[in-house]
Image 1 (tube, helix red, strand yellow):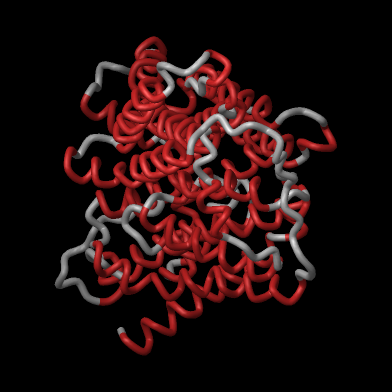
Image 2 (spheres, rainbow, N blue to C red):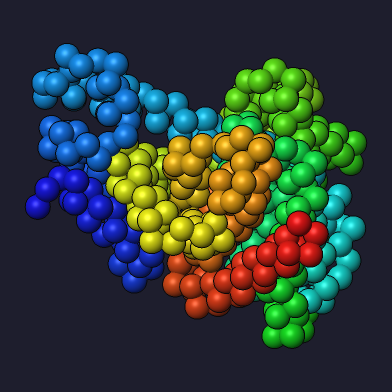
Length: 461
């Protein structure tokens, strides 16, 4: 078997191991790390055959400007010093962003900052609670981004719902709402950020065209669940005898600073043009310094130091992200994803079918490389283009539609989106449980949103 095919086999088997995490009793982070490294091992061993076959777009570009690099040593050098470094840079940005966001949320949580919000949500009616939390997530993820929003909302859910299975339903709906909310905002999802920075879409246009399909994508599953959910949600027991070690002033200050710090990230990116993770780490550092000063004169047992809070941050989730993103990066580098994109284009040849398929695929493969692949496959055409090419102009049908499908399609599987991966890691949601209970609802919402978008185009143009 060629190494090119072996990479795909490793990825598929690893994916099955992640899906069957509970029956196999092997943590998904371990399986993800295995495929994240094994795919690169197969890639470097098969470098000569893969590169001479012409499948790797990255190598073809490099070789065109370095024609002397046709030895096996030069090929391995290219993988180690160009490909890995390049992908590690992109992956690290996501990981440090995730780490920063999780730490900020944990600091707010440990200081009981979320008490201010949970005290305001009085209802225990399951359906009412579902609507309140879903709409809160939908609009919050448009301002923040779907990953940060999911981390914040999962922390809130733990304060509002005691039963694990019920909380899984709510966390799943948070994933659906966060992905739908992120799709219509230029800063709400990694994929829309990519299209926005790449110049394929503009701010006002994406909000106007994608808001309604995204809203429908969330409301359809929400309505369905409203008829099937019954009764009241039981809140976790609060120990009233436990002495609170934070004052109301401290709680409010940390909540405002924490949420303000998260909201500051898109502003930081716009002003400085630096990657979002730097804004996140800047916010974290300011919050960290504030808590150090705040607890300086308190006795040791009453201190809430960030160093002790850091031990509560979910490291396996970070490793899981690292593994999955590394594996996908290897498939992108060697050219398997490029071949997939060409097959789609050749066999479908219709922007709605291509975009819809990319959305469905984004439930299986991370949507970031899929959108990156689509951006590489299709050039932005001239504003005067007519016919099929007119779909690819700035704010063209294909780019708007791609923002919606890639953003919301990932909800169909728990590991199909960054928000889903975070919720799965934090709440230990079972892959098979999600597949049985949520996937069909997510598909229903996804298709309803597509129908609304196409109708919108037909009626309004």
